[in-house]
Length: 302
Image (tube, rainbow, N blue to C red; front, side):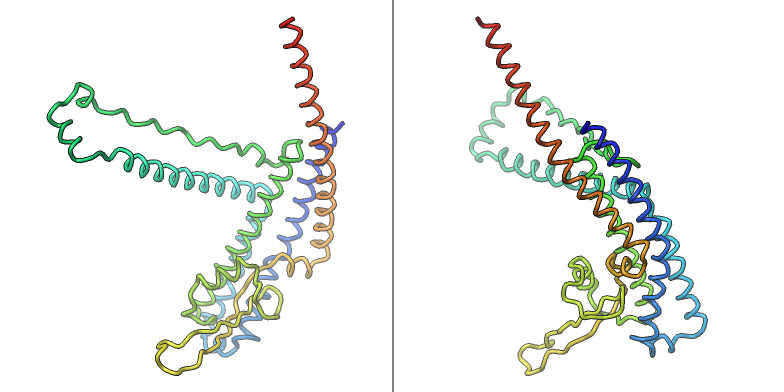
């Protein structure tokens, strides 16, 4: 019964998330262009007017193309593929770091006193002439079977599937925001010279320190210290505005998207309840199997 419920919920999650992404794709391009409009006409009008007509049209066209590329990536399959690539890349990096640390430890452990090394050189053995076998590199083992159109019928797999999709979606919106801001900076709309790490940190913190502003616009007040601390100069405050596509702003603008989000929350509540039931049942089964194994082993010895 629990397996049937999990299978039904997995199909429901796939359908609801697909509807959510469809509603999101229908508005993200419009909201991106609207955010660009706010920056160019309300926040930095002088910079936009300073562009010639060809550059103004080019800016608008590039924003439209960026929105179209984003829409094409807002499907369950595309986000799952992005999640797979991300997971493989992170696993490879972790493996390389572990291998580097292991090699460093081996190098430290293999260092010997100078006298012992000299004695070894004077009396070589047969094993020294042999070339040590290099350790064979094991293929990267990574279970990504849960990243499919419909997740496996188990609460843990459904939860991992949903979390992977959420992370891929947020990364896609951040990528689009970064591309849009680079375009605006290249055109001279957004102030240049601001360290990109600063904007990245603000975006990753979900704009925690941002000022209130238009939807999908990140507004920050950045205080810069004087160049020479010995001089009595006051710190200056720079206001930075940039595009930052946020799910909360996108959902607020589209009723269909808010409805799909509520359906997702309802699925999440069902998943939480089912997860508790499955965990309790698996624990009961494990206890029953252990008791049966104990009785069998006990009777065999008698």
